[in-house]
Image (cartoon, rainbow, N blue to C red):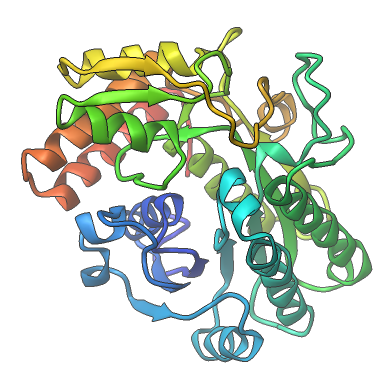
Length: 358
């Protein structure tokens, strides 16, 4: 029997890149999905490209910072499972708008946790943070869930604070109640439908789709690139585990990162994406004076592999090809709902071959 069939699921941030894909996947699995988010922040957007408003069960355009609105929707919809993805997702954006970043990423998370503290319907909640929550001294080690949290920019620190307060709420309130809560930390996700500014994928797609020039700010930075379906699979698995198992066995923090021993640099990723999009674009290196992000970042996902059986099934090259294929289909004006469904169903076939049970 399909676990997700008719499960009532609330997704905050459902109009975003990850939230949109998660919404579509859960609908394919048979869940009843309620979305709570502001309007898409990009044009185009995955949400509008696949016309998710036509298949989602409830679509609420509200701000995560509004406690009363959030509580009203949760009380009325009565979700059994919540995925919290509503966020300001950018390091560079946080330099321009630090207060709004903190309000969204930290205070928005506190709003949800406080509502859950007295809620009797929700049994499982996954709070999505980021791989950037760790105190990163760039010694090139892979971060484990037990490593110290930090953050030298507003985005990273706001997410680290969200992680810390989630742990505090869990230990203070939730272990004695019916709701299990965890946080999920993933690497740099690629995949179709992301047009968020300051991201290499956005800049590359915009350039390659027009045979323009791609200007790189930090060509030598290495990131744990992974197709977003990989961590989404992790979120789905941990939500199911927490729902079916009371107590704190599956609560806490979880890393979901790729297996590659050496991740591509920004420049190497750009070259691979250019090739897969059949573009004649040039790639140029900028002398950027913008605030810098950390040059190196990688996750140790051994906990997820050992305790819930999660492991990546896509290598970096296949993730890049799937990403390029999606954008090529979009710019060729294909039916993106059907195309996105096909990518998810193809991914599910790979999961079944690897004995996964979502």
